[in-house]
Length: 352
Image 1 (cartoon, rainbow, N blue to C red):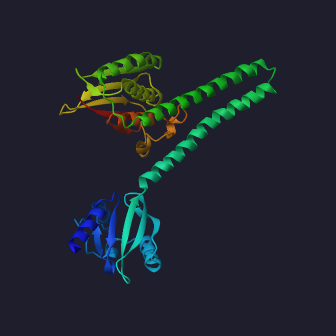
Image 2 (image 1 turned 45 degrees about the horizontal axis):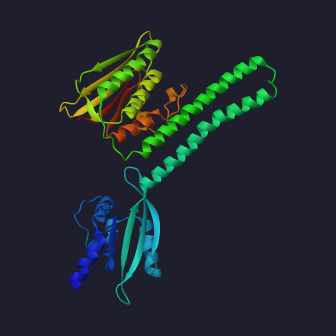
Image 3 (image 1 turned 45 degrees about the vertical axis):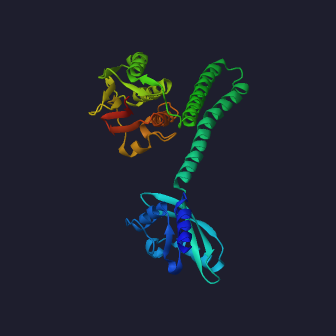
């Protein structure tokens, strides 16, 4: 019977999703599951297959946990709290400690941990997103409202002011339209993020479509748009409309930000494969001002714009949309850039 009881406890602990352990007498670890082993290895910076029989406080050096444990020992009441742990950045945890009565005089203690880091990061992103979206919409709305008030009042009979202000209002309304379109597009992509594309598409057709679409725009800006397609077959599982949107956003960025003040600028649209011929690499290369190294990790953040791009009209959502489309296709997105040398964007897809 004791053996059966121990087996039942093992099964209960192993069935827990979150890191869980039972602390026995003398603060020694009695039982734990695999997530708890991984967490304790992280806390103690030592890699052990098991910590059963170990002194918990030799493994955990976190004052908040020790304080709550003392409270639970005194009150014999389950208690939960939070703490932060620094491990290549801040990680946030919630933990609970519950007493388990063994007999009239002794207790074991159930420890459970939950990593809240991802939830907190997502919540902060959501809050920042709402704040930024509100700001981006509020500015043109305030501008339009101000011009309407002026046209209805002081400039009521001033025809010259009418033309001037109406042009500005049209520009501001266009800015809001682009922002709303990008927000809706981003929301739609995120909504279907878990539904991977099942249609077979040919990247040859997509890049040629985008090349012919952008070639007149490039010529108008005195840009040479080159197409380098070295693949006869470039089939992947994908959403054609999303892939066109992805490439459109990247080419728009190259035309907006990848130009130098020189007689001839160049953008290369390239399709190649890796040495193993199981991956397709889509590249967009410009030879413009480039991007500072500190900006590269943040390029796909919503509303993030590098300093030299802030004078150019845009919503700050283009590369966020690119990132989500890439993720939807299980594609790897990479940026390489050097100041005054240019920027290269690489998308690596699984080849069918």
